[in-house]
Length: 87
Image (cartoon, rainbow, N blue to C red; front, side, top):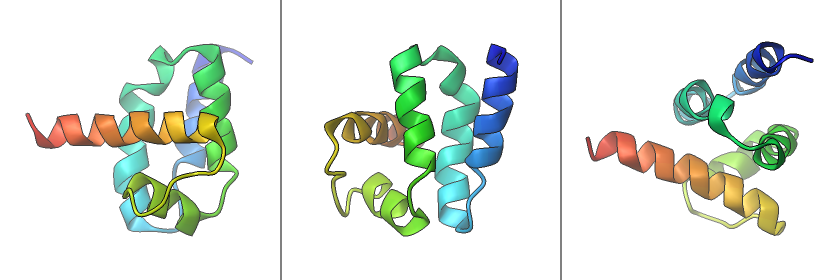
């Protein structure tokens, strides 16, 4: 799979059933996914396999993923969104 195909798949996977998640994940995957290292890309794919409510709680910092590698990618998403607010 090419990098472009992978990016398009993750764009589609980031469109969730909750508007809040769409607003948090969409800009992240658009701006940051192409720059992630392969391991972080794998972690993002794994995150997209999780339940919407869990992802929302993690990204909103209401809970922490039990898997440390998911906690890292969630922190990157949070940091990206925080940076957008501080511009």
